[in-house]
Image (cartoon, rainbow, N blue to C red; front, side):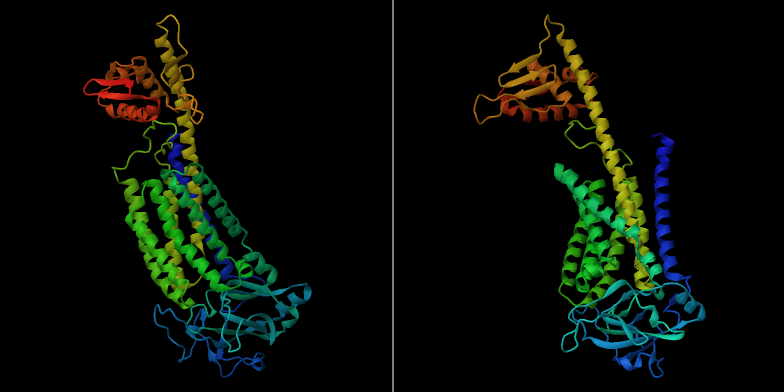
Length: 572
């Protein structure tokens, strides 16, 4: 890739990710704020009444002595009753379930009735969030029920569902004023008792279903699941500590997969009990953040910081407590979690990314050449730029989501879509990594061939060019450039154990073996093998000799260091 295009590619990538996030935000905003069909009726626009208890006989008329529910969204804890119990912050216990009825007047004009009469239309209702147990009536007729109570009227299983939509019989709709009534039973101090979030509306069920089918979201969910499997397989193929970031990224993707499934309306059919789904949702989202930090730090730094380790332990402990306490405790802890999330992710962005990646001059360069082909390929400088861009996008969308959850209750879920930027960034980084490995392999092959040619040239001074050399159980295949340790005939031993030497290791070892018992200076070795003066680069030769010494130990030979003189190949 040319330099100008290479420098421009991060900008193009960032612009593409931002446009994708904006598209998702705009699409969800259209769904929440407009409806063009003649049946569309936003339940939040008109007056809403509420009373304690439930009387079926009162579901057909507009209330006259009920309390007017003015707060939005329509949570029971915000109802205009002075005796609504107040819970103590972070109390592990909930309140006994109470019963309420909420009524919405739904006006149907002549255009809406003509629309119903002119074609086979199926009306439908949509609720952004409803709980804990509930029933929906239209003009006194029950259209949907999710009541799971014991003999004392207390809840057995909760149905705090999100993104609920269902059809109803069009014959229930009459001209003029219609009455939509919702029976609610739940802890009155719980955040999700009543109608939480927005919007809630009536419309053509076909339009509702098409709006909320959300194929892109399901594709994203499948992508997370596939990424989890792919990177887990990559980690299991080598299981190196230096490649732990693949495992962390696999777990990060798995957490996102669980969260996206738990946050989709399909979970209501798969696992109806909302106590299970909400815990799955909260735990997977909470654990995904430290796993992302562990992935990013192990990828860029090569190690985990104490901050990330501490935040991971904090998340595991706190999420464990939510498994045993009442659902309202989760709501209270969520406020604290938002604060810690903001602090930790700010640390990741401003220290791990901005300061460490772009400012820390002590970090080793990614373009340092590797000595052993079996070692991981070097990371090309700038390989993590797509990951840094993805992390910044997650940070911005995460702040937006926190503010929305605390003050606006729109639930746009931009965080999930923003993680796609990291997934794509990791794919680009992996591509760059494998490309670097391929180039390194090509360089190694060329280098091996060149060294073999040099060895053959030096050996051509004799009358016959030997094809092999043997030193005890140690043998050299000079033509192939490989060294072996042969067994002594023991049936349990290994024959022809390949030492897997790099081209330079093979050349150095062969040079020393040809001069067995004689001291060969470091300068001679370096000038013959590296074809340049030794100067100050003594560490490379020392590391090469140290690696070879370990590999040839089973052969009965070693490479001894003669202080201030060089190296000697001799028997142990």
